[in-house]
Image 1 (cartoon, rainbow, N blue to C red):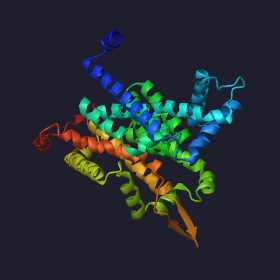
Image 2 (cartoon, one colour; image 1 turned 120 degrees about the vertical axis):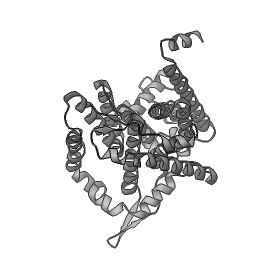
Image 3 (cartoon, rainbow, N blue to C red; image 1 turned 120 degrees about the horizontal axis):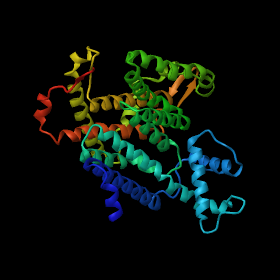
Image 4 (cartoon, helix red, strand yellow; image 1 turned 180 degrees about the horizontal axis):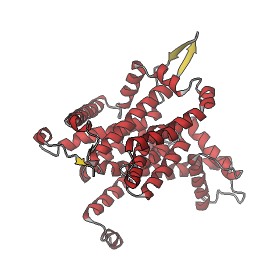
Length: 398
């Protein structure tokens, strides 16, 4: 215990507690995923997972460079397996025989749990900007046990990897005051976008807000003007440049996809699937009830500030800024799922929806919903009358 104690001593009591909770969460995530992999996850459930792995193997053996950070990540784990030699299975040529790849895949799957730990750590750090230690820990623990998250943590698919960098970008985008945070946020949003372009779409707006906030602090220019310019540069220009891609891959450009697929039935489908975080209907209903309670109180508090919202020289406190970020990300995620991830066919020039969605796409929305449940949980730690009489805590900008 002495080395740990020496490490904790320079930290403040608050940071010490954060570190203890983070280490505990990392251990719990690794333990639960390892147990799941040992007992239930012998075969990966998606063919794409094997495709990603063999693509990474091919890039290592043929010395090809991939633009996908996820493929590079798997290639690194493959090389790491070579360093461990896996009981002498790694040949001098830098490859394995086909019969040996089963052990290599298992090793890579265990090692890839680091992406889940990465995601959970930043989920907790974002939660800490809104809640106290215990509530943040409990909410993060709940997020770590959502069924889809557990299942895909040990399948070599890029969803968890992309989300981990998306949440990291979100964390560093929250009211940044140092250039290092802006740079780290930018790097993470690029990594997330190169892994899954839809992750870029989901997290780019908070990044633009954070970048605009930082620039405003430095040059004292209008925040909304800066945000508008950055949105044009980071969203509209890529949209125009990738027109041929949209038409080739999806048959429709993004505007057409939104107008055609953003329907009540599709939104209902995505919402119903998103709130099914477990395999138990009772638990899912309790989870949904908590979200409704939490969001009702949040909307109530925001509505009390409607007069201040009309005055642009006022701003919310940091917890409310984070809540707004998360709400934006959630709705962008719902928009993305509704318009791009519901299969369809065209019959007699008519679009026919399949009324289903690939479950792994719901990992992000389910994790984001846990923040709403955590907010409801935080209400239990204070008397209810506090929320009915609490005065807004806005601060006036200088």
